[in-house]
Image (cartoon, rainbow, N blue to C red):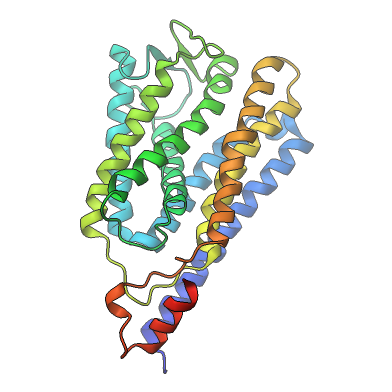
Length: 305
């Protein structure tokens, strides 16, 4: 079959996106190596650069999967919901608890813009890992999956906060919990609040994408496309192992969060890679396309199942 110029251009563009994403992941790995070698030089900038890299990677990956309009909607929903609840909690204590930010940079209603950026990037990674675990690779969500995918993704997102918050708040004072808390200075309400907020914006996006997700019958996603998100999430988890290794004080907090990271974030990332490799759904094929007149698709669907 002769490929059209449009198909060739699309394939070339997708290859460029793949190269860029893997390059970004490579930069994250390099930064972590430099952090281990020269902690005094790179210790203060690695995490900030990592947040920006994940944001860009999520945009590019989301564009490839959902298109520019839909990933823009994902960002808009995430930004509005997360910023609203963050601002409300700063003023009222609901849903996270009473706290305030000390980090520099532009803010929207007392909430640093970098926080919104982090919500989107990690939210998208968590969403994609949930798609992997729910066997929804390249599919339009339907039925129970419309609620199950955001529910599982919320747990995956909160795993990150369980590891991150004691270090960022209690040790580095990036934000301050006014009344402290039982989990290394962090209130338990923070984690239930996180789960609630993340579930709200992911569920809203799920309802939206349920109606507006458009997938061409010949769309193909390689294993590596999905594992980009798995590996990125795992690298984030590994940064807390590095902090444990490099720590000279607050050993209890660093050791605990590093250990938790191994058995939550890193394990989840590893498990998601295995799930992708064992998946029968790498290519999306609608049942209605499996007809006697489409032997190639029929054959593919048969061999994958």
